[in-house]
Length: 404
Image (cartoon, rainbow, N blue to C red; front, top):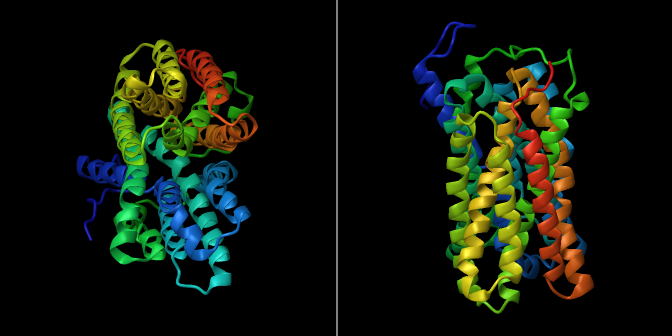
């Protein structure tokens, strides 16, 4: 197992240690979305083979996002008590276990409980990782804030693409949906092995105190950043869930729709990589935040209503805007705080509400489809959501800090 070089306790980490930690942060990000996209990629096969009831399908597809909001507030408390590195290691162990549990070879009646147990474990683990990564970047990579923010947010986008693109081929190769799901525990276990020396290098409880002082829940700046995150998340999860069905509804065949979605995800990764680097170089981020929010909202609406012959342009605009929007929303955690202690608290607040409320976007699209029989109403919805994201992004982009 590779190990980072030791450093005296309390001393600044060496360059080699920082590089090693940076690699670990990126690899953690590369495991934080496979649970969502892998299940969706083979949902018809799982439903048919396991005879899943309708309520179980609904719970298993919506619960992980909801759990991100439920467990996110625990991360600052756990980090303060045990240290961010130890909590991150524990989260990755929990994630690996949850991914493996989803593929356990259990009897028919135990299939749903196993899937539910694994999903809950994964949701809790991902919530902790979501909160801790921005605070670690804030603490240890201030000199490379834009680069590291871009790298780990791009890794998160890539994890969704990997889950969507590789799960079905694994199912075809193995003939087992259980193996296709459980296989995603393997990269998580590898990251656990890499994180062990990072955790050993830091004693438990050495994180900066975050219990006293000004609460982000009483800060107008924190609320602006949080609402920016809420509307970003509403679009982000709706894109994952509904872009392919929207394209199919417009008459595009399944194969072409899959290619269009894949290209859109690649552009998301490009936006995720470049937007944070630009954000940290600007005096403030008002214009950047507003522009990428309008790109995402407009691209979503045009993917539904725009001329079909330009669908590649609309979905490309959506992908680039959505990737940049997600990345700058997460980068606001570091840019609007002065310390890693406040960064982890702000991250817990904004991701609890961001994912908790943001998951409503997916459900709203489904309800609008049921009520109207089409996606036109969803286009109107995300025009409004994009505009609200731009408003709060403009406010969050002002060069101010959460009071500490």
